[in-house]
Amino acid sequence: MERNFRSPTGPPERITMWALRMQQKRFIGYPIHQWLRWRGVSIGPWSYAPEHPPYIPHIGTITIHARTVIGKNVTLFHGVTLGRGDIWDEPQPDFGGFVLEDDVILGAGAVLLSARGTLTVGQGTIVAANSVLRESTGAYEIWAGNPARRAGYIPGSGPARAALKAKKAAEAEAAGVSGAPEAPSAVNQG
Image (cartoon, rainbow, N blue to C red; front, side, top):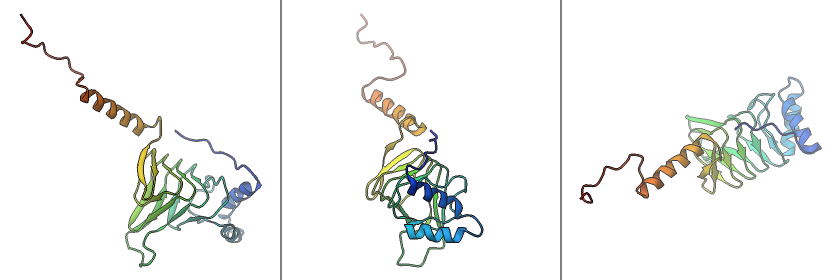
């Protein structure tokens, strides 16, 4: 289920992708990080591996909490925010931040909020546009809504196959079809 990296579509996107890679450099990193913030992209330089910065197809305001770990092939659309859900209070001692595993897609305007523990978005998961996610997800799931709820699984993924198999088994059981052969009935033997 691994997606191939897509190159940015235009010069602004290419410059931003270059800047995301360069903000980890020793002397020029800080000015580039400040330029990215001025452009509306606030992603900590140590949130991702330098060879795998997040893919940003459209330039827009993106705010990522400093305690975030970003995996490979993560796509962030404009308006994405990862932050604390209790900003009026002191941070909880057990607040661990965010983990975006490999191949995650966060739709435009998606908001991830956490106050305690670590909020993990599982591998291959899609969080739909304008969704507000406040809990961790499993792998290859689709989440949508405010508050976000699991809307399904990515077609062809392991969880999708398991869910389809369970659904078919439940339908077969409801229809009275079982896997074991039925014993002959003594009533109609004559």
